[in-house]
Figure 1 (spheres, rainbow, N blue to C red):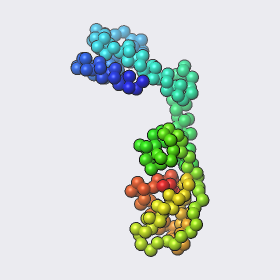
Figure 2: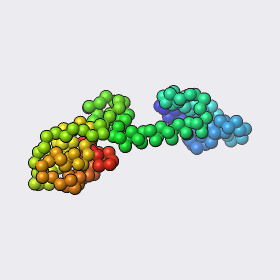
Figure 3: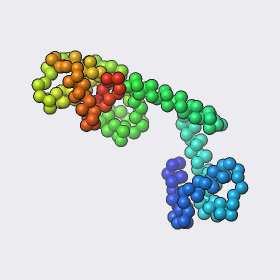
Figure 4: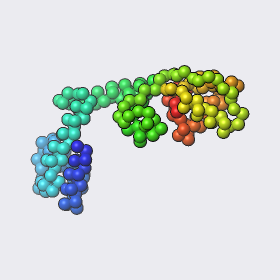
Length: 197
C-alpha cells in the first residue's frame, strides 16, 4: 500500500509539474474536514486526484489498525492513548533486554543469520558466563578476550559477571573495554551495566 501511495503521488506530480505535496495534502485535509473547496482547491483536487489519495490513506490506516489488532473505529484520542501505552511497554521490554528486530539484516547485521527476518530476538537478562580465563596483560588482547566472551555468552552479560570470567581482572578495566567495544560498534549496551555482542 505504501508503494501504491508513493506511485500515485509521483504520477500526479509528473503529470502536473507545478503540483506540490503540500497542495495535495491541504486539499486532502479540507476533504476530511468536510470543508468547501475553493476554485484553486478544485483544480488541485482534479490534478492530484486527491479523492484517490484520501482513499489510499484510509486503506493504509485500516491496515495499520488491523496490524495492531485495534478496532477500526478508534478515534484519535483513543489511538494516542494506546500508542503511549504500547511505547511504555516496549521501553520496559528493552530495559529488560528484549529486542524486537523488524529487519535484523539492517538493524543488527551480526544477528541476522541467527534469527529469521521479522522474528523477535529475546536477550536473556543475565547469562551463564564461560569458565574463567586469565586477564590478558596487553590491551589488544583484552579486547579480543572480551569480544570472545560476548560471542560465547548466550544473551546479555553484566560487567560484574564479565569481570569474574577473568582471573586478575578489575571490574573498571573490563567495563572500560566493554564501553569501548560499544563505541566501535562491536558490542551493544543494554543499560544498567549489561552488554551483548
